[in-house]
Image (cartoon, rainbow, N blue to C red; front, side, top):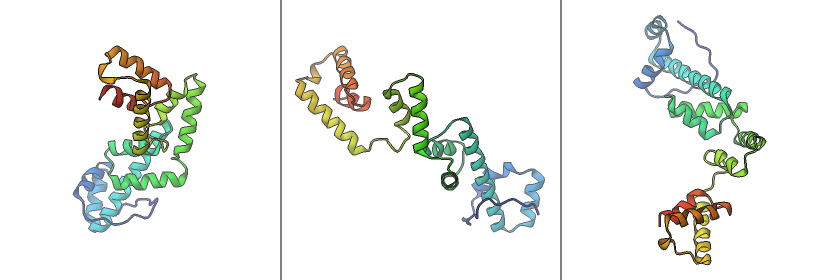
Length: 191
């Protein structure tokens, strides 16, 4: 029987033919046939799950070798590689424990790099916003839209009567005041 090194203790899941189909390509034909002949179904599943988890870890390390990733980015990229959600969760937990994934560190690296290149804080927000723990919640976005609507009302702007060019002018004005592009678009262009 072929021996596979265990990096973590695996748990037994119910029989999944998809798992066999996904992971079987990692073994040679001879290894797979000997494993199928000499193992019970439970040992086979454990072995295939360990192989898939090992593939997930290798993929994550390869991705982290290219550039630092936020946790959400890493999960998204691993899922796109065809790794099952359960394995993705285990790999992400393992990477957090090892200190390989940390949103705060990636935010700091991205901010320093962007500012060193002479870009502004808006660029930093744009790069960091969608993935980080700093992303605003739905309530915060709704509050920002309400604040923008109040400011528009205070300025006496009638949105329905504005031409497209005037809308862009006001959008630029509000953007420079710190409102997000999403809020500006919702309030000025979609009303």
